[in-house]
Image 1 (cartoon, rainbow, N blue to C red):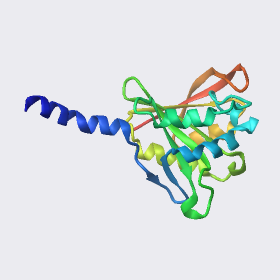
Image 2: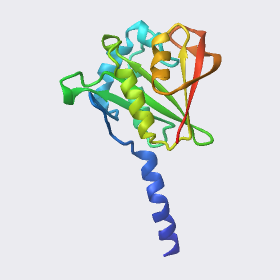
Image 3: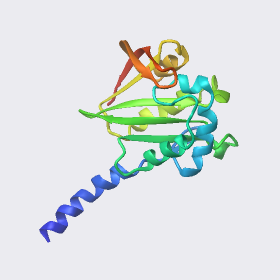
Length: 190
């Protein structure tokens, strides 16, 4: 009996790590990725401008890379939770972009996002980042994010969502094959 109750105590913790909440906004739904998203992810990230706005997306995108990304996002042992920005309930595209949280030590998470180039300057990124921060599904006390210094639009998204400039740094960009100057931001939660 004692052994069973220890397992019962762990069940919500394990389930919490495996599931991601669905978050509704005014114009779209943030939902976990699904295998059918791989094609649109490949389509949007084939645009050099999208890939070069991220640290980890290669350009050109290798065959099977988007399917691998989705599989990692759905894995039980993932460190990063990824949400599709799904506008299909409002007659928008089923996938507008993605927003993610990566667990860090000390109740902190790192937020990342990208939007398909056809949806830039629509406010979708700001709405998605704000909704994810408000939901705070990791229960983080601090969220971190960064933007490449040649991408002031992403920096505006972060400041519009209550992130505060922390300092300059640099990060490797796979698509660029180089270290790129960044601005680092944080948002204290709570």
